[in-house]
Length: 322
View (cartoon, rainbow, N blue to C red):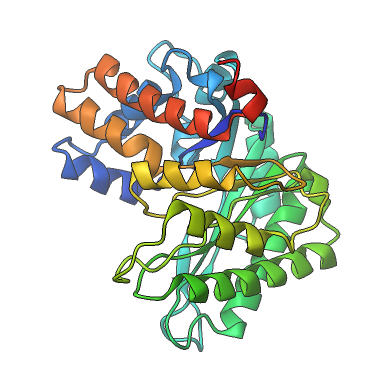
């Protein structure tokens, strides 16, 4: 999942989110349209050269490609690992106005066993934390860290690799330094809860946000500033962690790639790669829709973004021979 020069494609938007995205590009949000869009992604020629695994939602994992193959089977045959998002979304956190808790723990063990039987190799759970002058609260951080740890422990019991995603959102006008402070607090809480539940860190992939300023902040940090701040926060992570796969978090595709490349210049004890959603698939969705759902157009756009990010995380000795 974190092999050199390869990242993880997040194609796990919920039915509601994916339907909204389809409507925005003029496509009727049907189950078949969602299936066809994701089939276009999975069947992109050569995608496995830069992608080690694809995260799906429950609907997609239960669908088949037009040739009748289940998505999990087709993904493995293309040289990638299939994964699935298992949380049920962020809901308001009782007693903490403006904050959320990610739900989905009820019945999780049985669902994980079912996904493993379908061929899934890993799972993902996303916690969402918002920055303001007063947020996130210690309560929200602890509640979400606890849920992430319970999920990760259940995954390992089911034989699935957990992707642990504590996302500190870009929304707002906070500074780079403020994002670093909050991200460090969140990581500390998550690591403490994972340890409390006896989660094997060698079998965990962390999917964190990069340390960036808020989307409404007047000054945009350089890739070098983002890289230094991000790696400084990550240095507190345990050395036996399997790897770190950054989310793009609403950054535009070019900026996410530039920041990813700058981060690679820093040495860490674990591999650093990407697990991008919008930064990979937005260009593909736009091209696919604009061309009348042309598979070739969508796949070419996706291949371009995958190649750029794969190059950004390729070891320097491999870059020299490429």
